[in-house]
Image 1 (cartoon, rainbow, N blue to C red):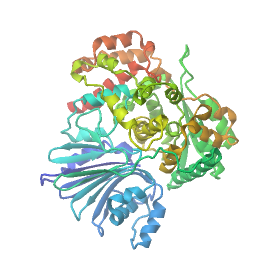
Image 2: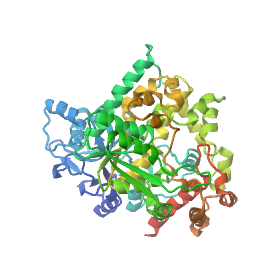
Image 3: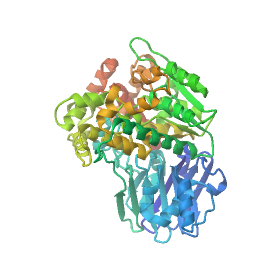
Amino acid sequence: MCGICGELRFDRAGPDPLIIKRMTDKLARRGPDHEGQFSDGPLAFGHRRLAIIDLSAKADQPMLDQALHLALVFNGTIYNYKELREELAEMGYAFFSEGDSEVILKAYHAWGEKCVERFYGMFAFAIWDMRYGSLFLARDRFGIKPLYYNLDGPRLRFASNTQALIAAGGVDTSLDPIALHHHFTLHAVVPAPRTILNGVKKLPPASTMTIAKDGTFNQKIYWTLDATRPQQSVSEDDWLAATRLVMARAIDRHRLAADVPVGVLLSGGLDSSLLVGLMAQQGVENLLTFSVGFEDLGQGAERADEFEYSDQVVARFHTRHHKYSIPNSEVLKRLPEAVANMAEPMVGQDAIAFYLLGEKVAEEVKVVLSGQGADEVFGGYFWYPRMDESSGTPLERFAQNYFDRDHEEYLQTVAPAYHVPDVTSELVARELAKPQADGFLDQVLRFDVTTLVVDDPVKRVDNMTMAWGLEARVPFLDHELVELAARMPPSLRLKEGGKFPLKALARGLLPDSVIDRPKGYFPVPALKYVRGDFLEFMRSILNSEACRKRGLFQRFYVDKLLASPEAYFTRIQGSKLWHLALLEYWLQLNVDSALQD
């Protein structure tokens, strides 16, 4: 719901308010409703507000509680803030506002660092404790809300995007070779704390960090996901009943925590359609829904819209629907601004789709529910069965069905200066081997929902919608729902082609054609089947003076992809040419241009 930033000095100097201003300016699109700053000795906060809960000035930030000697900047939503407020009021706390921000302050005072364990929601926040001169940073369980930081000798800076940190100055923008390996192997996923830039890190999901005034750090993980079976046997009917109960509760939480209208991004797939159906079942009237489609390419490319299915859902539930068709010429024209708003390079086709859809939706509402996370939580992707049927070590079974490039091809992709050992295989093997997972698919699904989903679809949705002051909420990543699904047998989730519990929940509620349709995606075919103007656009990027001077890519590899762009796809059907062009273009727009300013 906002953009946050701040600086803590360790050298007894005070933060420069002009630098905080430069940072908040880079966050303005995330929070168009209010701008604020706060400073206290070595600490300064900046905030841009998107007003969703308690629309009054009393909920503006940075929020200062003089009685408790605490100050806060917060991005996100605490869905159970009303229940927590009641509990804190019974403990004697008095409130001066009606929103969730003040609840965080009181909860921190009451329960200290453990307050995050009580929060249901998506959040990234910072609390300055004037009593002890300490800074407390926290991020939600699935990293739905971003929190980047730069630690450079005498100071720590943090922000909701990398652009704000770069604008502040003093950031090492050289490329991290280990992050590059992850980026080109895990389709742009770079797990925390790394980013593609050496000088920018990110707080991992489900983590807190306390920084003392002398610069010492204490980082903790406050939540992990248990992927083991319950001790007592649970029947299929009981699993499905529990899913229905927890899913309904999750939707209620995400829908009701707002003092503004809430819509739904309706793709036409099972996940978003189920959100609409369950909300209608709960009695929500005049539900706002939004769909986007793109121009077909023909000649073997997949359909560029899913209106065939979303229209059926709209007709069944009589939603107040908004449907947008976007020509490829508009996609190409708007690519620069979409890429300029990416906090990290994002190669997923749906990034530009969400950006263009977000612009339209933000004209109607400030909050939408989205179906992201359902495929990871309930096993909806085609590669899960393939992994299950493959043989070898857990790493081998995962890699041969998921990695964009094997290590040997990575070494052909980038210049020798960026060569490293097979660090991504090491990371994946380590993550899969963590305890509290009964079998291989338990390991994979847990890794996906706690790591891969964070830095791929969820990050794209937050970036591209918040670029228009639009908050996207993801009920399928309600942590109670994820915890329930993680304890189910994978065979139940993968039954009938995947997402069986959701299909069972939808049966009789949604049209069968929506439930039983082949798995769809959010397609922008022009970024996959690279032809015509899009090919020339990518050619101009990869042959540019900036790209050649950077010396990141091996030219023979670039030339090979340019010569036959539709011959080289990743194992999960992404364009390898677009991967290269997107990274180079992101660097030109977000690093090179900033250094020239």
